[in-house]
Image 1: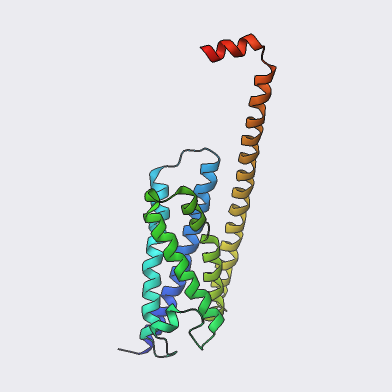
Image 2: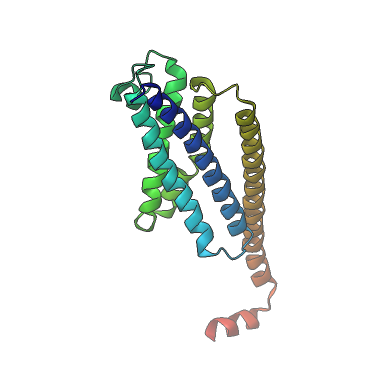
Length: 205
């Protein structure tokens, strides 16, 4: 087998994993903004989000295997699984290692979502933004295709979409929290404004 085959495998699978991760993060943010807006979410939308994340894990596995099999840079399992364990571009490689662990944490907690506290699941799932950022840094700094104009356009497009959806989600959550706070303050005020006999009759009834 041509020794360059594994180099092409690691390159192509790394880019594909980033593309899948970008779509998964964008789709997850879209689902979250729809949920905040109290719109109905069809099951296939959630299934697509999970599917993209699952395939991203599989393709990342192919990327790691290709790196170990490739002879261009001597990568062993220590170099690809231990942050800063590689002497070749240690910072860029470490960002990819950390992104891999975050990816596994997000996917495993998604599978166990029904058996986890909701707050813990959300905290882990929100790390997807950090995961995407680290994966992007890894691809641009460690990858050999960083100068590809099509890849750069894709990074700029994904960055703008993710930033926009994140701002929309934060603002929607802020409005939702403000609405809840306002309603909780109005309830005691309305109760105080009611005549005493009405409150007593309502309590008895």
